[in-house]
Length: 396
Image (cartoon, rainbow, N blue to C red; front, side):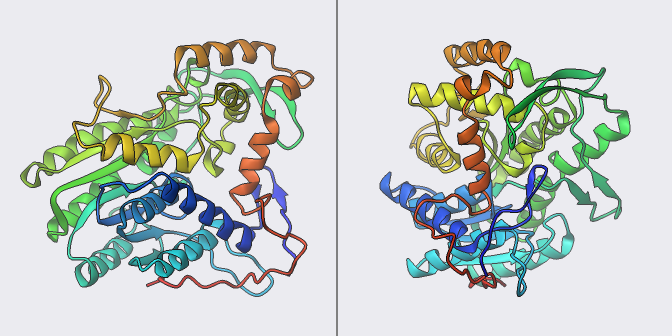
């Protein structure tokens, strides 16, 4: 079938299998071009099909030659209907890994559930024995708690008062003002339940209980801080409370891993176009301005560049991992440079529908958004019939 992007708000309802495959190949080639990383050899990635999780799996496999197990929750294709992009990404990754002689198996299901944890544990026991590195990179808006069976839904809200600021419709380029009503205590609790550290800790507890974590095992989860102008809706909002919980969980997990000389870290990453960030008001405008500034400075990074640098220059650089005063890895260091943030803040004040084409990088934002779904990838013929029914070779 001929596959074209079909948009509904900040979601693309279709995905292109050939485009997703090419996107994965491009990331693999980037990692290989940067040279070998003396990193972990047996890696579990929870949330492995898109964004930072996918980049982590690619970097571990093609940077360090690691055997990888990827856990994700994606929609399979059917005749006449495309899969979710993460399905096609995972199919491409497994294929490329197998072609390179690397172990790669994948599990598709709800990573919050006990069933998927148990299935993953059995696979590790059967195939790998123990894990050196656990990447936790889930980005779900909903979590069914495995013990209470309560369905928690996260919200994107400020805390303590209504937040009003600029935003942009990245499809049309229209800059407008948006107001977001404040969260109540239930909103906060639900968001922490979904996006906080409890499930990360449950995964580590389950793996450790079965003696599946190697001596010196590391686990890393991903977070974001961002600038003052997005604080009310992000870092000081409901998501920020969840990220605070996630970051605090790193310390409790490290305590649990002391007998293995293991450690848990949170890596604070750069603002990038993801399905999740596209849904947050204000963030698309900030990213479009940030991209303009960082590209002009020659320091712009996409997802794979961020994660390759995290592995090569932080996690596995051969010495003590540099941390900030709250014990976090900061790979957002270039984004948060004073000169970069000062320039973005200046452009923010100038941003209107009329000025944005000159002062922002909305085309770059749109291109990155579409690439998430396999569209606008160089080297792909989108006029050609594509086979939408693609299998994942390593699916368990």
